[in-house]
Image 1 (cartoon, one colour):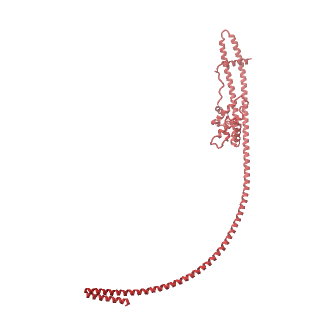
Image 2 (tube, rainbow, N blue to C red):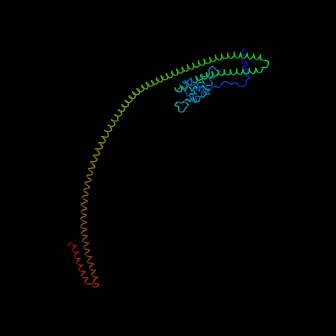
Image 3 (cartoon, one colour):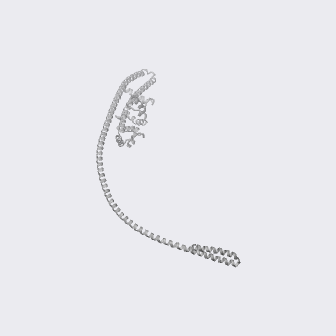
Length: 411
């Protein structure tokens, strides 16, 4: 009955009072939550979430969905996968990073509902150990952050409800005071009885509420500790699983490398044997071809030697006949030259005799012409009367003519 009366009064006060009472305090921002979580649990949360605005933006979309009472489990597998893919994109979307995300993962964002696209993205990430390990780590990190965020908000909600209850009691006391003033005239006993009963009920309700709130806080802290323990156990389990996976991957890689090494060694041995066999066959074929070439060269040498011998003999015979013919021709030419020399000598002698006769004739003709000239001079001089001169000239002319005549006959 007391509880019902107080609830009715509280509902009345909630309708009577204007919107002056303080509401539940605003939730802390994602940035503040991450900074506080890093201070309390440095090993769990790296500095990357605080420095990378991309990671903070991705968490600001997903973490508010963790604090809800409409479903038993805060996040679905689809939402966790999208958040883990978004965080993975924040690292590997950098152009300077050597690893490149699959094209299907680039199309995924916080609003993607296509499960086929997300599954194709996960298939692409699973092909690269680095990408898959990063995605799997972020998947567990998102789930753990959701537990931390939800537990922090539950504690804040409980404290906010307790503060609202205290404000409501203060408002109720104010209303009772106002009612005491209104009914102050002649009704002290009624107001006093109501006030005393109300204070008793309020004190009783406050004690019961305090006990209930203590129990709720203890249960909340117990649940929070259990949740933290479960999360820690899950983290350790996941870390063990990741370590085991890394060990298996390393062992598998060692086995593959060993198999590749053994296969490579075997193939190298087989290749060397096949190479030696092929080289022997090549050398054998080369020797056969060389021998065939040598035989052909010897045959060609024999044929050329015989041909050259025959040609030399024929050339010697032709040369001998040509030399004999040349000797015959040389003799004939020598005889002809001898005959021509004798004929030429006879012709020279004839020319000498003819020259001598011609010289004598010229001298005789000169003497005759001189006599004729003297005769002409004499006749001219006789005609003009130079008798002495004529005699002198005639004497000189006679002397000259005599000398010429003597020279002509060889005296």
